[in-house]
Length: 242
Length: 98
Image 1 (cartoon, chains in turn brown, cyan):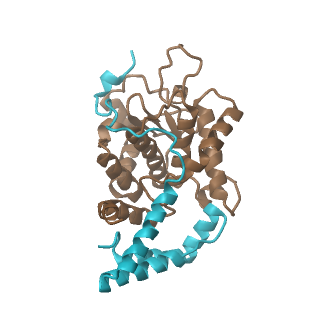
Image 2 (cartoon, chains in turn purple, yellow):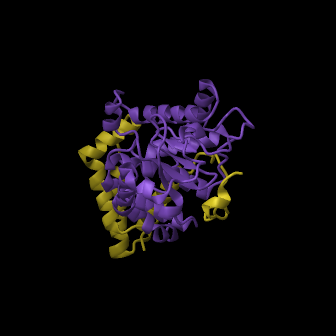
Image 3 (cartoon, chains in turn yellow, cyan):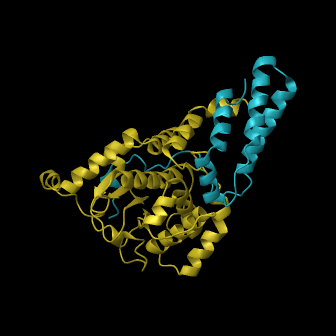
């Protein structure tokens, strides 16, 4: 699973390899879901579902990504491709490429703005999975690339979010943040050394930081995202008239 | 017709010159944005729409193509798919590893 803010990668942890590929952070992943009655009594689950619905219906980042995925042939269905579960630690979400599901951590996502960000982050992973042959499990560079893009485009690295994490910086700090978050994400889901993760991120940073699909720009606000959505909808005219 | 409606170029230019955008650009790239290009594109777009001037058309198209090329100057990390992943729509039980 690719984590948003810590999301392990999906993989079979049948003891074949030491690397559990991050599944330990999502203990509910391979269990049968609880009965409907039990689940509905847990308010976290309901709250998660409600916030998710709100994001998918109103947030321009999510709407652009959903549209772009539809265009690429991967229509996203709420009940099939999203799952609200309890997770360990500080994980907020993840993308499970083995089951093509986005996992949302109902016990760790408390606010709508956080849900918006996590959904955007994971949808970017899903979008990459949909449009390219991404080797999530064996190729650290591919993983690094997707993490760089997700940190860059989802709003993870806005100044306010960084200040809330007590990370201060201004000139070009966005890139520092993207780099650091990508490295952290890789280290959370793979048993690789810090040097390997840093090297992978450095090698692909330029290419992946500048890959702004499907946004076409780095959206710093909902206005930017709406504009990007508009440009996306007009791209046929754009490409035809170049 | 121009690749984008002329209002888009105007909007981009006004947006580029705004304080918020200047801040975000500095935060992202470590330097202040250069907005003159959007203005030139807007003027070329207007010239195209009103007079169908060939020079304006070419200038605008070149500018837009240059934008696209700038995006594509790095070698891609992964190969693009020709069709979506085959298991995207599979029901969940079948996906579970056994």
